[in-house]
Length: 280
Image (cartoon, rainbow, N blue to C red; front, side, top):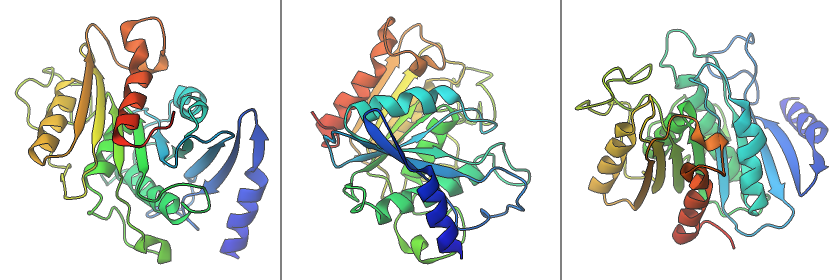
């Protein structure tokens, strides 16, 4: 019955728009871990470009403070990757924050499970199972870092055969990640992140993926968080790239032209190409 419902939901959501097809799936076969049915169920949508240029896949995670999902990421960022010929997955993870657990716990569970879905279905979707990346913004950037450096730490107890599939990422693009330092654990950095240690939430395990970090120098979520991530990853010998834009505030990714930070997408896509994940 559950398989039937999954297939029916997928079939109903399949349709073609200009330049790509999209198909929506539930993240979980039933209720997500810890849920009682009174919240919106998480979903992921696969966008298949008409002219694919790479066998990599990018999972897109919106921001919103783990309280909501910012719509411009859904409406704009997905299109940027699809227009480049990249198979793109939009993850609409659970919000708002759940009581009694870490602010990111539900979203992290959804993200790990979604990575497993993509890896399991890689051949069907024309994706290399070892070319799976993630890009996230603000809280979504935090989630991207978490998935990148904590893939060997299960966010939930296994529920089915899918959970035997690895959930590591092969590359990651955290854009102005929030909640990285002790100063700013749950809010903007009160002391600008100066001399603040990185939170112990991040394990930096042996499967930590190469990253391209992007941040604004005037962000209320201090760019020192990205600097701390960069430093930790370099200690492990992981290939890294980082761009910090002067006189630039939070949410600059909503703009892809005009200001000097408007070229942020070109920078991260050029990095993907250098690393072997981007197409022509």
